[in-house]
Length: 187
Image (cartoon, rainbow, N blue to C red; front, side):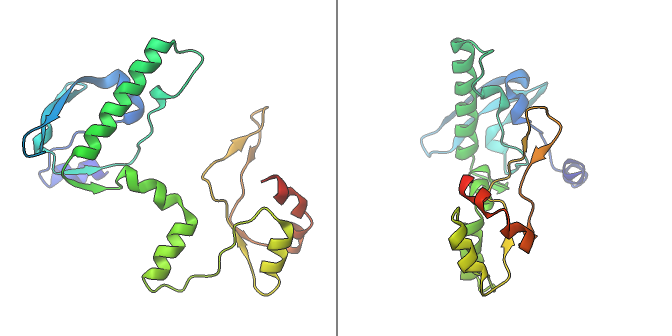
């Protein structure tokens, strides 16, 4: 949808899926000129882009699955994959353009405590925050206020049989939760 809107407004768009970069990136050649500006090109599938012409990037996904450690990859293939990932990340960080969802800022977007600090500095009313794995700390914190529990990571773990998932859903703490406080020590 984003691509369609941009193209309908006359923008040239090249969509790159980082998780498939190893299969689809045909050519990558770039460097910095004497002024520190990026020069070069990349060819992705059959489309070539002059890097000096890039004026905006919309980043939806910055996951390089092909570069993950794996027992199925030999050392040479893994080194090549990690070098390709590093070269592409270096390219992205050197582009002098506007970014929507800059990947290097995305991790801080996932940091709940940092989000609350920023919101507070901008004048928002922000509730008190407690991150703990101590039942006593949670009991003390919840003794004078209602408490919402929220998972810090965005991970959902499946059981070994693959039939059920383990995740902590955002919810108001109830008396039933207080009966499971010993589980908090394991987190």
